[in-house]
Image 1 (tube, rainbow, N blue to C red):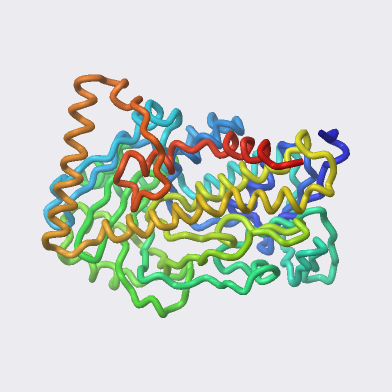
Image 2 (image 1 turned 180 degrees about the horizontal axis):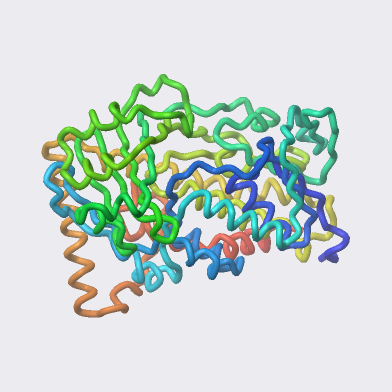
Length: 445
């Protein structure tokens, strides 16, 4: 194995979003020299909520950042699934502390700007350099070179492209472009002061609550954020799949939002009644591409630029963190003899990551269908399933306490969605760094 100095890489990261910051931090923690190039003049992330399930919070803990995160995250006890029109409870999905009992780590909900700022602070403290106001105009993925908008040409051992679902960098190794998905999301945050004006909305601000109201062709998700200072609310509705893909933060018409809420229950209408402005997100994803890496190993796509998936498994942010944790292990200087091993290591990284991504993509599609079923026999069967699952875990908890959540099941990567314990074990119980180290150990030298 090589010494740290012999394999310390010069890494250039494109994009200072969640994936770019996470990869920069993870690689810097391994001793590599890392610089981020961000086209914007400063850090910017859309003001919306994000789910971090145990496979993601495990990574945050492994990086030693948990104390900073717990100051701002929401840690719900359960997610309550409610009927859209009468607000009746259909089922409850356990989160905390059950998540720690079952998978070893908590389930968090976080304000996206908080996540970005915490990762940026950790990256900066670790020695990552950030260059703002620099757009990348061209990339030679095999040579590891890129040109900035001011004409500067940069050479590096590795370019990490983290420029999102609409990635321009992706074209350096793949012709695949993002495709639209037949759903739109309207997203908004409401200040705590407004939510507390009415007892019915004030109750929703409790940190132990997380809600999803499900109805025919529409679903509403809500939970507290930013240490209880904001309430995140989201409405999901169908749309034509031939419209523009992946537009994340376009201004939305509140009249349009409220037109979709006519049959929804009073609490949902009241929360949306407190919204002054909201954004519309046209969903999309990036179909499976041949490879996340170049032949030379000098270029890699990460996060949404590589494999954007629809958000219905709550795994978009987690996949970015997993990419970072895995990439750092495959490029651990203590396991490399020389930089000549880079092409093989990077191909091994791709082979390690892509199968998991594609399994989770399929589960996300399965979850999407389940949330917005039309009224009828299939919806009734779903509701009975949720009620049965809730009764089962509550009865086990009453009888066995914490031990009820410590029964281990075999992870099933082929589960249709996240309803089964085996499917959840595959997604939430995953230790990316440990599995990546196994992958590195299996590489023939």
